[in-house]
Each structure stands twice: as structure tokens, then as C-alpha cells.
Length: 180
Ligand code: KMT
Ligand code: NI
Image (tube, helix red, strand yellow):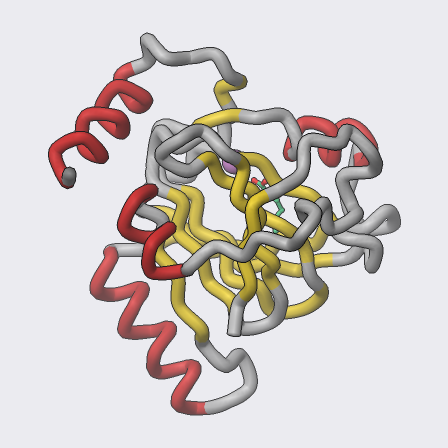
């Protein structure tokens, strides 16, 4: 099962787990409900997995796809990119990542603005809604390979917090309010 936990507030190495003391795990269904994050487990090495992925892509209109490999040797401007992934930001569109190899952390803000760390590995697919404050960190394996999906022409631009006046942010906040 995918694990999620509330983070401590230490500014130590972002690649560490940053569990609270004592550890405080979050509930996936609760986090999905309160943040709009979506999550699926899809086996990357089976025909059933392939079919499930194809169906998800078709259901959600993901007609663009590429592969992103984050490692020192394969990613240009590695240090700079790692830094920018970990700056708290939003996008104007969903961020969809399907992990096929390696591992890492997607951190999202919950409804009370606490950091929730989602531990991602092969087969984990996450959709971060447009406008949610989030960031990404490698773990101590220093390697992740993910498929990126998008509807239409991809826009990867991060807008660093604070951007509370952006439409995408306001729409997100409003959407979460309406659900309550
Ligand atoms: C992002 O936008 O933060 C990334 O693409 C991180 C690497 S994909 C696991
Ligand atoms: Ni992002």
C-alpha cells in the first residue's frame, strides 16, 4: 500500500523521510477527499496494468505522454531542477505522474496547510489537481523514472507560492470549499 504521512518541520535533507515523532500516517481516502488528489496503483509489468493505464488515459483525455528520468547523469541542469521541483508551487493544469522505476516523494498541502508526503514507487500513479500547492523530492536512492501525461499541449510551468491570486489557485480553493 502506498504510504502517506504528515511531515516534521525540519529543514534537513529533503531526501530523508521527515516523519514526525511519533510517526503520523495520513489516510489515502481522507487525503484524496480533502485535497482532490487522485491515486491509482497500476502494475507496469502486466497486461492488466497496461489495459488499466490505457483506460485511465482514455477516460481522462490524456493524449500527451513522455518519460522523465531524474538522475544526475540523465537530467540536464540536475541540481537546478531538483531545487525547483522542491520549491512549493502550483500549476495551471493537473500534474500527472506514473512511476515506472525508482522512487521519490510528492508532498502536497492538506486542507489545514500541513505537508503530507506521498511515498511513490513503481506502479504508483498520482494526479495532483491544478492549483494545489505541492513539491517533489527524490529520496536517498536518487533515482526516479516517471511517465508524464497531459491533456493537449503540455505546460509544465511552476508558479511558486505565494500565488493566491492566480485563477488556478482560486478555482482550486473554491472547488475544495464546495465539497465541504
Ligand atoms: C515535477 O514536476 O516535479 C516532476 O516532474 C518531478 C519528477 S517526475 C517524478
Ligand atoms: Ni509541480
